[in-house]
Length: 269
Image (cartoon, rainbow, N blue to C red; front, side, top):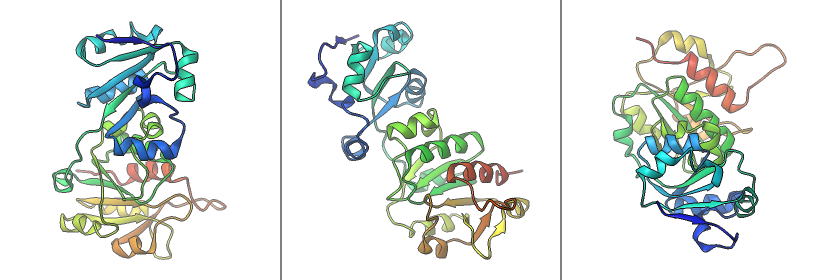
């Protein structure tokens, strides 16, 4: 194993880890450079278990023993080791979980391959908050969603915060980024999916009513925070569904709403 003990925050070898709190920089750099960051030993282990390839590891010395089996499996991948203070100076935040890895992004999954044999799909339109994206993926993994599609302007599921909040569920649920929005929804309809928007409209049906119908294939479309779904996307779906609310509450956060809807609309025999 190639261990590099860091002495300076200016070491060019750790450029993958510099100033990770700069959201705009990471959104530009990570997809363009074909990388993402897996933060915490649990998450990086889940990334490796999913078959993703590490570029390097970055950790405090006390985590060496905990990850010794990982280092044995990837002897040609460098590991950068430093004090907690130095690692924080490099990344811009305190590493509460002690370890992270720069990972190679996997090749995109073709849409036709992604949809083969699945019954429940979540579609995210322009959800830009990475915390919400990660939380939706975690619910998707737990509550029976077979695949996730994200619109061209949606937040990156492999952004560091999304990965962390999902607890690695972004590696568990197959996903793809759509190229044409909302035009690519037609591909779902062609595959026999009922398209349902989780949106408060005048003609929206209660989510439990749709659950009783138990569509064989269902794609649930979730709109952006605040504004909700675009009029173009609403025009492209088959129906709108809503979660019945008690008096005084009109809606839930999109991540919370997704969990309720995923459970209620899960595929049944």
